[in-house]
Length: 456
Image (cartoon, rainbow, N blue to C red; front, side):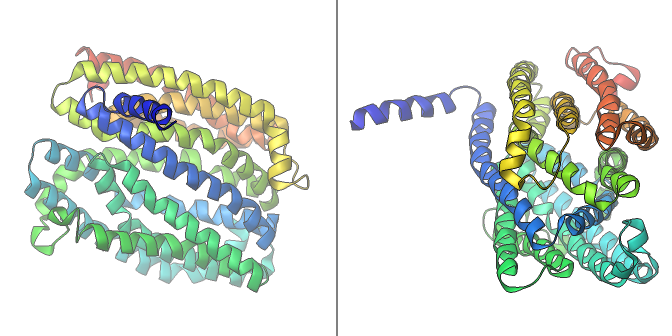
């Protein structure tokens, strides 16, 4: 009996350890990510109906919309996070530990200064912002929403700096370890929300504290542990803060910065448009659909996340054959996941009824359009991982800027003429341009035939 169990285990182990060292590392991380993010997906699915029952669909919609607005401030890292990811990976590939430590220390210092300035500014202007009007919420909630916005923003700012530990670990091609932080944050959030449902009446302030505080505590504890143990040689230090190295980080990071701004406009405005056109109540079904199909996005990202820094290392070492082979495998994986997405669309109505009940009405067309969006976005993800890894992002930036400029008016037009699903339909249609252009750019770069904007 034991022999029958051992043979599959040995075969599986040999399959994992077969191939290039870089590929073996990626496969191990993918398995770890599947386990950890699979648990995170399960928690997030439990958290949605639990949170809706704690408050109500309208309050939950207000919370989601406010969170989306605060998320806009993520672009204030001015691209330093992604710049660090590439520069740290390059330094490690070249065996330059001191340079890696300089990049880490400098990034922490700059982002800390930026976030202090932003916090001071927000404290000054927040009392004068009419959040009830922005969120299309009842006027009597104005004071509560001002307090909630302050809580959400403060925790966001703390997380903004602390999450650099995930960038460092991911850049070192250990994304499975980095994903543990998100899992623990979700687990603790679920625990706190469950306790709140048993001990308090629905309260947006308590919800904001619960969902904001837990990831900050996890990241703070994780940073302290990693920088005193496994990543001690890279631990940030004032002695290694060298602002003249900011230019190295910024040269690439500034491009990521503008891509981030465009992405925030492109992807994070949907909740606001829906809240303004249809009311915050309609934000809830939209986000339920998004959460449902985010399973596909999350599974794809499990495969994609280890590849950014792996592409950086392979490009530095001129391992072109490995890059070509990896992209071919990703294309096959994309086809499998696309088929799975179609199945999810077909089964969506049944899943919604089981998951959140029949009280929240979700039109099938919304699921259909969201499925198409996920498939196109996943295709774009294959090529953006390579382009980001090798730092050739100017064309990607151009497409993002044009897309973000068109997205809001196009989304409003389609939403007024088709309904809520028109918002995501606009994003889907605009994403087609990248789906055509970025594969062409990747091929040109890999074949060493890129010139002009194709090579930048």
